[in-house]
Length: 419
Image 1 (spheres, rainbow, N blue to C red):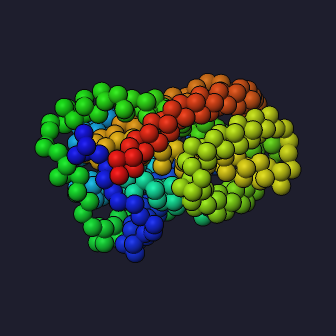
Image 2 (tube, rainbow, N blue to C red):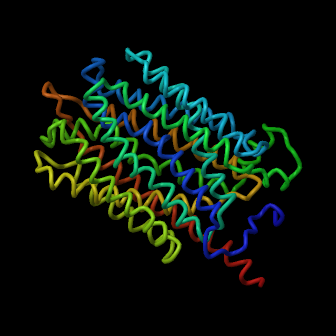
Image 3 (cartoon, one colour):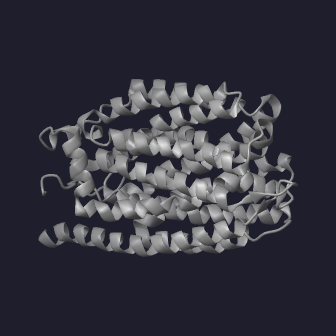
């Protein structure tokens, strides 16, 4: 076990190549997250155009998650057997093809299939990105790195979502997907040319069969706690996000043309806060920042889901504070969970963890679609119930992450004591 344990030396900064890798991974995540996020603000446009119900729209969101989860599980036994760069590029090309199919979809059924294909490849990409991050950066700097990479979430709100809404209003809801394809092709070309091979993990253990490696990962007691916590982390996002645009327009009384402004200002705040949250995670403690994020998320979710007709300025403020809470949770949680797997198991662990997150998120999206209902005016009913469910899951993750933090802290203290 000691041979497999991470042994990166302490570091106080990033090399120029590491900074470039962080920028590349952040931009790659930007395309990946934008492809998922763009559906939420397009919901108010897409549902009437394709004549689909909130439950059907929830299925469009969840089928992406389910297919991503299934592909991650199937790939888990193989991910540690290959150069991570090659694995990343292979699945990223498949993601581009799936997104292109979304861009040419003209019916609900075609879009459903296209989202399924996109999810198959996207599920492995996300886990590979985090495995690369854990391979290349020591634990002491992962909060900082995760903060930058996770800021892709905010960047997609600042740049991608408003631009996507503009394109969808001008040329139809398919146009944003075609934009993502163009950007992704450029990212793939740059990664192929300049990213170095990432294969140090191949020398850490004898080669094993994929099935054996998968069974080893899912049966290791150290990992089970992380998998259980991950299952609940994405509940809030998948339950709330698919319906926020419809809720904002029909319940809060905000004009559809003002949605880009809301997403842009909210995203700017999150994009500025992301790196700061990451640095705070490394400086004051990852669990402390996670706790702050949970409290902020609970407060803002309860306020948001109980709103009626609201001035746009207050909607922007509430959304910004909600995103701050969510970002604090996700950045610190990603840094904490990255310390759970040993180096030789990172690809497999991250793949399974990503699959669990996607599948649980897909279930959350379906449950959210079953909870809310649409009135004749398009307003959503029972959205407050979704808020209660999200609050409950957030409280549970707060307790579960406490025990993970204690385990990681004890493990980190052992080498120091031995020295």
